[in-house]
Image 1 (cartoon, rainbow, N blue to C red):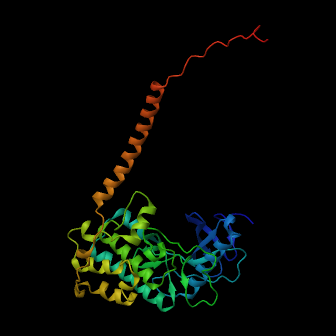
Image 2: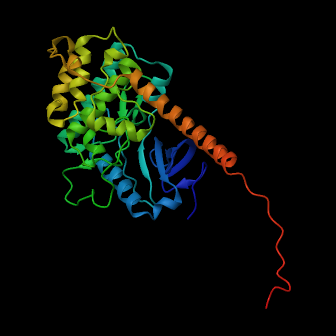
Image 3: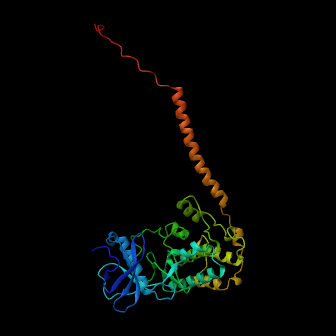
Length: 338
């Protein structure tokens, strides 16, 4: 077995173009030689095919994808036979939400609400099928030229309808730090409210161009999620509609029971934000200010350099205080032995 490349046939599919490479797999554009349909093929690198944990994740992604059938979720296909590990999917000609945010940040409110509504519609369906995505982020949201959302990558999805326990053997703290819910950071597996939190973070980023937590490193940011209040959207965008700010803060409540009771409830407010009751969530927050976070980071760097200077100064003082004595010629004791 070898790494596949453009031009080769993989069972009924002919690989025509390399679309992307990730840390674990290549994604090819391909043609189904039986139907003539254009598809996408995700093929893991050889070194991962024998990894038990990776195999479990890859198998889950395929099984969940085959079961779900919704216009806002990428459809996983069923080949007639498989000679190796790969996933065949519908081909989507579009860009990721991450790419869109790199070019336009923040997004116009109408555009952000349209995308959030489509993502939420997918969550309503997904949760009705007892599937929790658990890794919702801009990289896993594709947008077609017509503006249709397609959610992908169910590698760490929780399938509550599965009889076998696919969670076993995997790390419980998994996901993408910026969008992980506090319960995931704490090592719990999460539920449908975990997806609501992730969508709230995506809405925060789409409407403000920022995320509510920051820090000198990822561990500081993750710790803040479990113990500190977020920055409100108005800290980054003072002109944001208070109804939208209330909705976002409701979705990213630190305690799961304080979030929306369902994706359907969140979808109703995305569609009609003017009907949202403003309960003053933004005014009750006590986040550490961004200025203080920057000052704290600067103080830590300054303290490091001051410590280095102090150590060198102390070594120089020791050298001057106790200079090395010149070596004395050895004394001869010849003839003194009696």
